[in-house]
Image (tube, rainbow, N blue to C red; front, side, top):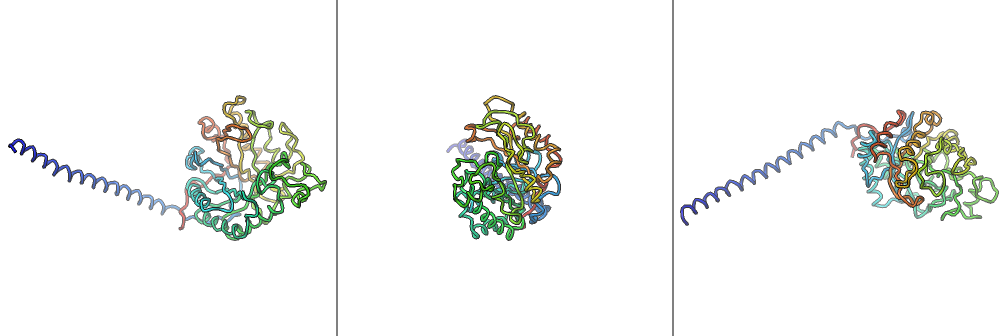
Length: 411
């Protein structure tokens, strides 16, 4: 090897001797830096956690606001996390709606635990809709006790739960429909377990709005001559019509029920829905009080739901789901005008003054295909900047939201 080659090799060796330790050193410093940063972040998170108050179980009676109404959301969490919705809204929603089958499977429990984490961080309470798709026979003391155990864990983790059990039971489209005796027995079984073992949870009874009752032709409509049919024939004329009470045969009693609720959507003027039309004035109030007589028909035979259950029975009234239909690409009235007309009815000072027992309002924040319309319906208020700004500006000061700061689970 000549001198030049020898020097070249020496320089190469020197470079290797310098670069390898330098790279190792940089890697070590990088790892150390990352570890330091992670350690700092962990320390900061730990310090932040120390400043949070410990989660406490809120007694079910205290879930009802002393004044005003809780504002919440039925959110498509797969497309928008609760944190994003809270940021869009400018508030943490007081209520987040979840649906699950009953009895709970291991997957259901895992999904609900994940929802609890989001709600504790960016909301407040869960409205848990339980759907016994295999029928009311699935409700036993054991399945109810297992549910109550899960609910108590959620409560201890800082998330109160209001259980909406087998909603729309007066319809004819669910496996639990139009079976008032079995339904009441099942509701009471769930309520007994929840009231005994989950003091931070409450029970909601929520029939379907009775317009069109008894919804003839559904898969699960009561059969003439059956015991359930006889229980629904409240005027004893041998037929089920709107002359029969659409609600009272299904009521489980004041001891079992903590909240009453009725979902009120603005679908349209006539069936089949799908046209973009402005809501009829005062329709929301008329549906709550059983006085509606308009484009959808004459529903004035219905009981006054608000007065009977909110005033006479003294229960807080919820509108668990509400929104106004807008079908993109169909033509007709503009999206903002339709939705704004509906939320004006919800948020009007006159509405609050007239219905002080309305203690919860939840917007249905979904953009989805609706079977009834055979097409897409955008129910949302926060996905479009102009609508979002108009909606959030319209939120009245009597609405109540989730706390600004989360709590720290005790275990």
